[in-house]
Image (cartoon, rainbow, N blue to C red; front, side, top):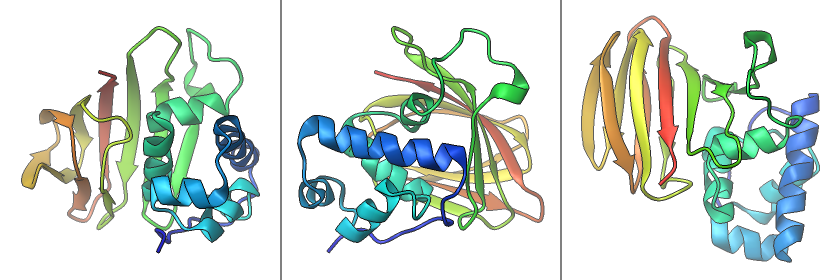
Length: 195
């Protein structure tokens, strides 16, 4: 019944903190694993293993969990870091990877309480294809600026071919898909503004 997808085996400090935060979010709501599975579409076994840091959830699984908890992925990932600072040096920016999908995500400006915008630096490996069936927060405004390579972005069943320097602005209401075209990685800046 549930959505089955697992990333690499856990083991980093970030994986352990993420696992603890996921377990904490579920406990704060008083949800059983079954209830969270129903709300997110992620299988109970995947949820259990993610909360015990036995696996590192994929981008698609994290997206589903963020939807269930009403958070953006950056908000969730910032919650596993120390208290966010106003100035974040490059060496201190949180980096999360989904090696199975060929996706790397750097939180350039982690979200702060009272602030609606954030900047993400993302890289897709050649041929990488990451699809999300729904946004973590409906109506999320995004500005995607391609820095290197070529990228196909599908929003509302319309695919946009983007090259270095191109910028696509959109609101996320449904499924989205990001696919790297060509022999080189696609690197892009994603500016996210909460509704």
